[in-house]
Amino acid sequence: MATETPTESPATAQESELALSILHRVADDLAMIVDRTLHLSNAKVQRIDRRAAGKGGVHISFKLRLERDGDVQHGALLLPLPDAIALANYLMMMPDDLVAEHRRQTDIDQGTKDAILEVGNFIGGAIDAVLRESHPGGLRAKSAGCQGVRANVRPAFPYVDGSPLVLVRATASLHEFEPFELLLMLPDMLAV
Image (cartoon, rainbow, N blue to C red; front, side, top):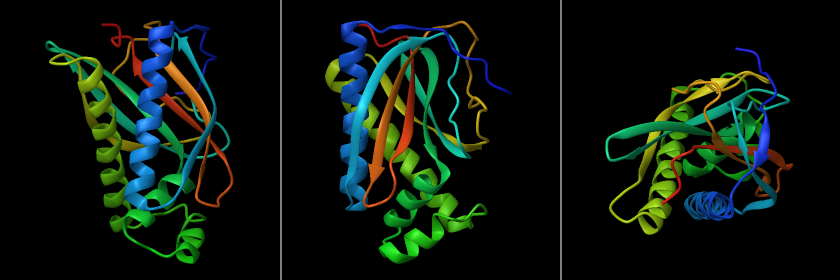
């Protein structure tokens, strides 16, 4: 599915605060788990009316399932494939030189695929932790798997075009690797 440019509008202060808290918690948890820095900068929160696509190469879409009182909606966190591979390799305790070599791969082995799924579980857990604090007894999140997505193609998750999403677009850098764009899309159910 090719991309159409989403219509952007400002996010509310509450959406921005919560979405940024979620993104920072995800980055902090992943950095702790892989024992490497994961630096975020230039984070911008906005509302969009269709899923956003990653540019410049294949991405991994870490799919998210959010639920409140039986209402289930979905979102995703998009990372470029090399950075998803690096997180997975660090999770498997590989040394920096081997991770740097694996980042160039386009075909990944089953062990790396399994580790990428586990990274997705950590992402879902980090989001759930923030939501449990901000929405006691209400909103929950978990991983809904992951999927490779070609450049400029919107990730697949249950969604009706035109429905609002909260998008966080940020520059991230893992360890000593080149910075990359990270996209976090959350459904419009964050309001208390």
